[in-house]
Amino acid sequence: MEKDELTYHVPVLLKESVDGMNIRPDGTYVDVTFGGAGHSREILSRLGEGGRLLGFDQDEDAERNIVNDTHFTFVRSNFRYLHNFLRYHNIEQVDAILADLGVSSHHFDDSERGFSFRFNGDLDMRMNKRAGLTAADILNTYEEERLADIFYLYGELKNSRKLASVIVKARNGQQIRTIGEFLEIIKPLFGREREKKELAKVFQALRIEVNQEMEALKEMLLAATEALKPGGRLVVITYHSLEDRMVKNIMKTGNVEGKAESDFFGNLQTPFRLVNNKVIVPDQAEIERNPRSRSAKLRIAEKK
Image (cartoon, rainbow, N blue to C red; front, top):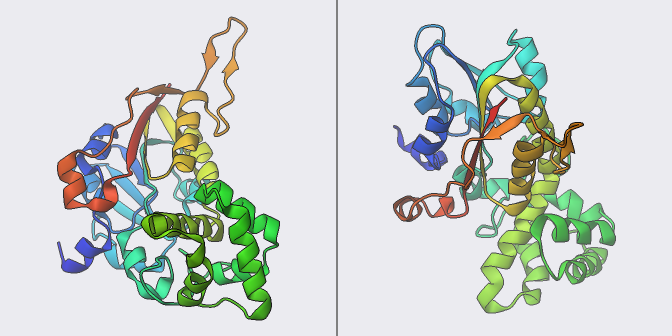
């Protein structure tokens, strides 16, 4: 492994997640979050004659990690278009789909991308640099109420209204362009001891909105449910409660809202059987090796 790959993104719950895919050497698999190729390499090491892996990533930086392997196809696209690209590659159904929803360490550590409050840079946060609005655009143009909703829903911040009002007041004087300018405006709202945690939530909320992550996740989960063969596995690693709720709901009820449908006899109609009833989390050794894995939760379900 070259240094570049190591620093890109250390794969979280690697063995547990790939084991959960129940890989057969001749099966067809999808890694919808290719990133640093950590999970993909492990999947490829278990494939043989007739085996196939598609790796999705919308970020051009991920192309540096493409694996030279005849069993592998890279798809530069947001995973919300899973359905279209499977059709494009003439794949009817697949044996397992893996999603690791963590933002690559590489994004947090690249000051030019604007994902982290540890650096000063432009407030960008787009995973796909060819895509729409940046974080700065959102902060400078969204109405106060909409900003408050984003911080409340996506950051689970208690002071979301106050936050939005302070941002709107500040931008009336001058547009907010850089992380440094933004921190100057919002830092006074957070106490010293909670500051890092709260700032991380503010940045998470903006990142989710910039990349339309919740909409994309919903579309991907529905497409994945359709694409899996009977007995096929859906394996997902989440990092915050919003994502986890959606994944848990789709696995338990077949929809992200968690609305349980029953048949005439009252039996729950769901496309999945849970493989692990209890969520799988990293052990202490993994958290020490890779502190960013501490909030990871792995869920596995099998298509009926």
